[in-house]
Length: 63
Image 1 (tube, rainbow, N blue to C red):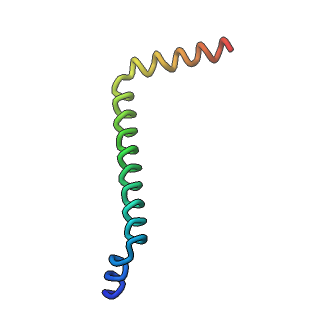
Image 2: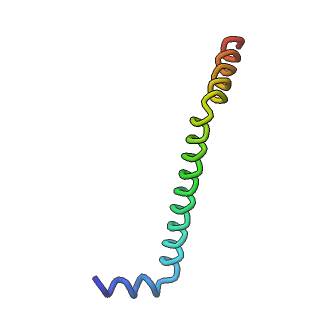
Image 3: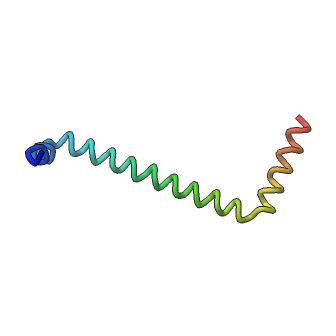
């Protein structure tokens, strides 16, 4: 089990691939956190959301 770690560290392509995967996961979780915050702030401003959904209903009715 311990002998697998030095082999991974000395293998440059593998470690760079792991680094890319890690960065991608960080970016995805960051984006998810940003989206979550945006949804929270939208739900806090209920009147604005209500106006938007009312307009969506109006446009949907016209078309």
